[in-house]
Length: 109
Length: 113
Image 1 (cartoon, each protein chain N blue to C red):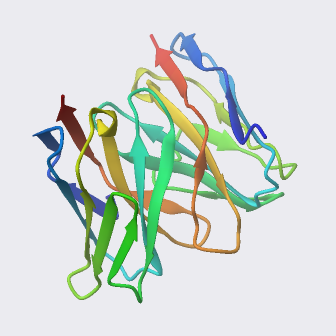
Image 2 (cartoon, rainbow over the protein chains, first blue to last red):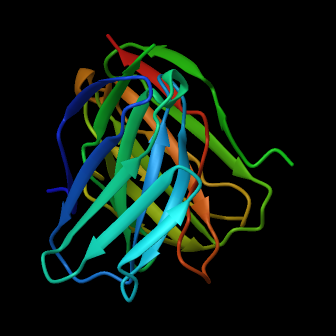
């Protein structure tokens, strides 16, 4: 089974609104990462948060991590049509990373 | 800097045929891995390697074989293709040190008839 599970599976919003995606995981982690996948393309790394961090920002992205609940959230502020993509959380172990099933975000112009 | 290169991008096979998906990276990354992605789903790990000569199984290894003779290359072999192996395959690499950011290829779309 997947280490990470994203919620919701699909999210549709208007341009300019904020988008929040959640991820739950099962085992202890050193860090949690978020990736983006445009349709038909490979995944691209967005942001990483370490287990001793609670919040991290990068541009319009904000990631939070709650290790007591084994959960993380990704917030995209002031969304744009170009943010339309699938977003995945991943946890990294020795030599391998495990991904959730992703959240498909649609931003309507 | 090409990053991670996968070939072919598209392939159609008949049941029972064999083929090799190629993956090469030019970043001198020790860690390489193969994932498959089925429609509407996340990535499932097939095989991975922590360095030349070392490979290990992931979550869904059956029907696939890998070898790692060089740091740069990590081919994935389908021994006898089955329709259940119709999927998009992604190769990824990362440095052994550091937080573990993966660099992905653009994927290989395989259809098994």
